[in-house]
Length: 106
Image (cartoon, rainbow, N blue to C red; front, side, top):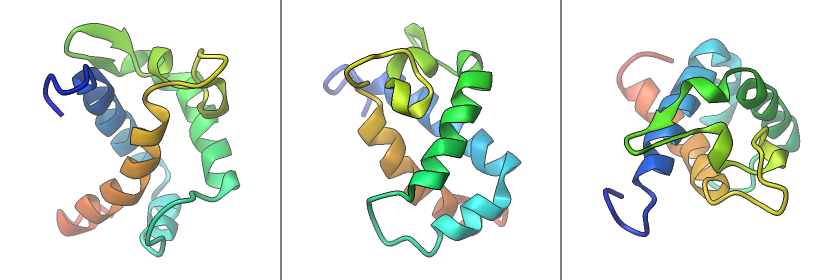
C-alpha cells in the first residue's frame, strides 16, 4: 500500500487501530476468525464505531491525519458521505484476527 493511491496512511492507522480494537475485544476477534469474507456483522461494526469515536484520534498515518479522519460516520469517523478507509478497515477486520492468531495473540 505504500504510496499507492495515497492509501499508506489509511493502511497504517487502519492496521494499528484494528489491532488495538481486537486486542481490547478478543471475543470479537475470535468471532471474526469464523468469517470468510465480507460483510462484517452490524453489531461488530457498531462496537468498532464506538471504539473509533473514543480512540480513533490516537492512531495516525505516516503523513498526518488520524484514523477517525479517514473513516465514515458509520465507523465512528467524521466523513458524512463515506470514508476512504472504510473498505480497508472492513478487510482488516477479516485479516488482522488471522495475523493475531498466527502470532498467538488471540
